Amino acid sequence: MATDWKELRTERLSSPEARQAYEAARTAYEFGKRVRERREALGLSQSQLAKSAGTSQPAIARLEAGGTEPTLRTIANLARVLGAVWVIGADSVTAANAAARSA
Image (tube, rainbow, N blue to C red; front, side, top):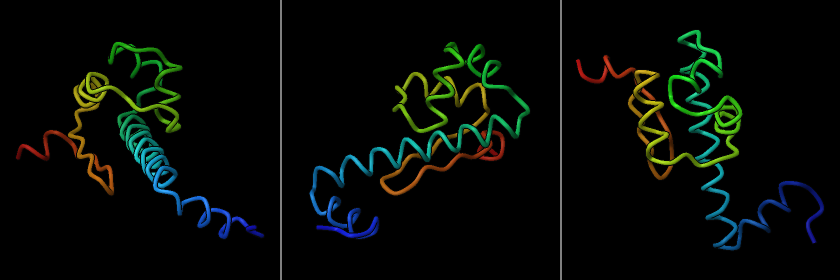
């Protein structure tokens, strides 16, 4: 039996199912982090972002905390409102200013 957090984490992630769940949670967390960073850079509150994106403030809070996996519609709405291009890959989530990407 594991005696510390590092050993416990290694033991639990040895299961393919646990590893897959961990990666899904990590991606949701990374996406939420990027949304929060972009929202704050634009000086928007969660409520302002939610209204413009057609959702609720609690939904934005959950998303930014990594507690939910957004739908494609939500991702598209957030990209439009935040002026961002989302690149979601197997190992990372990045965001770029949409104007900078098209230049």
